[in-house]
Image (cartoon, rainbow, N blue to C red; front, top):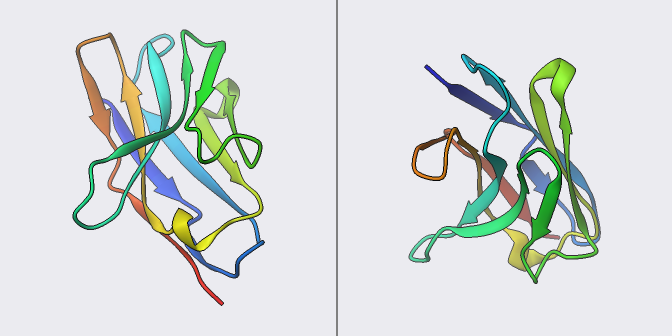
Length: 116
C-alpha cells in the first residue's frame, strides 16, 4: 500500500522560501507520475508541479520560474522548492503519487501560509 507523508509547510513572509518534502513508502518501481497540487477553501485542487515518467516535468503557470520539483530516488522523496512566495500561494499542498494513468493516492496535505 502506497503511503505519502508530506512535511515542510509553515508560515513565511512574502518573498521568502520553503521546501516541501514528500516521503513515499510501500511502492514497487517508479511512479507513473509524482507531483504536488494545492487547494484553497472553496476552490478546485490545482496542479502545481509534477514529474511524469521519471523525467518530464511541468509546472502550473502561476509558479513557473519560482518553484522547482525534484526527485531523490535513493530517499524515495519528492521535493518542492518554493521561492519568491506570494500571498496567493497560500494553500494546503498535497503530494500525489500515481501508479498508472488511472490509479493514484494523495498525501494528507501540508499548510503553506504566506503573510507578513
